[in-house]
Image 1 (tube, rainbow, N blue to C red):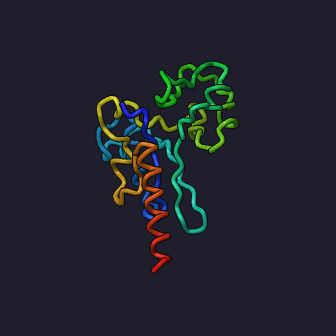
Image 2: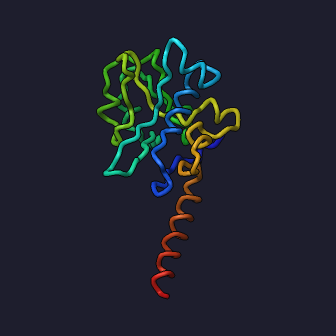
Length: 171
């Protein structure tokens, strides 16, 4: 499984089309198709938050922190991680609804379902990872703005981008 990978977003490529949210909701539902979900009795809910900073859409995902404050504060152990580097998962059957995790999350990415019944957070599509697939948001992004890469790949890309910008100023 891809325990060493993170979700990153190239903001310059993000169109704000919400395809990532749509596919996240569908991946976490019991429906097999978008048509079933649209006409189904219960509506699927995304674990992704898309805010706008000015006119720029910015998708936010759980960062699956190494020292996760949400997991540390949960009094019912509803938020857990199987092993170091694994995704942090939320078990609503164990959740007592205190919402301490919402207050503790430094990124504001744990949210309450509209019904108020369950809490939601990104789980990196754990079920898909186990099957060797990418998280639904990554697989669905039409511009490839949402990526699932290693920290090494991320830092290497950043160095390359910085170097390219620097070299362009020398001309």
